[in-house]
Image (cartoon, rainbow over all chains, first blue to last red; front, side, top):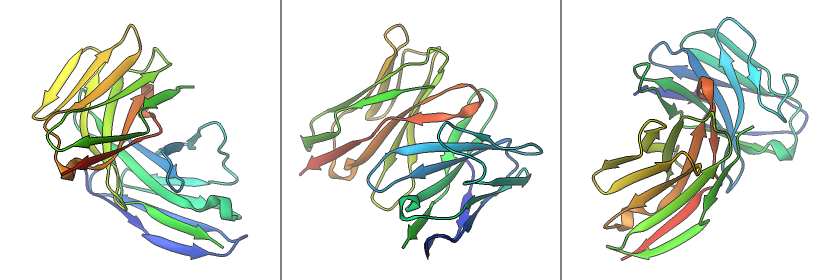
Length: 116
Length: 111
């Protein structure tokens, strides 16, 4: 498995501002992903963070709202821009780890975001 | 895109009984089906997974079955214990590792 950390663990922000969430892994991984979990809901994939290229966004998510960086194989950031109360969620990063035939996905502890 | 349906949304069982959660998926290209357990305030934890070339997998009290033709898979927990109480999510993975989740099942095990 992989050890994944996220910063911050939680934050309370004012509407109209932006927050950058960091995800750090203890080993080099090819695939990193960002998910959103709204209160009491399931996990929704936001985007795949690719090292050396632009992130690939899922339907309903756009780069202007959720810019992502992936500067190396152990680190990624997700920015939530121009926040509104609807952005209040838990944001989780995940990575694939393991041999190529048994890659499984592990999640970071999440960042709990509240937008006032 | 992939659409994963999960039933039931809530499940209450007596300690020692079995629990079954069922999921269906829509994309025949999906080839990996993990199950996650999420306790309140915690991250999702992988409990078991199955790949499309396998029909069944078991790990102690937990088993998963997969029917590729019907595009459905199920989680079976036997001899349930109060500590099994949590939200369980099924997921289907499309190529390049993208996971699409069901809506979750709140399992409550009564002592």
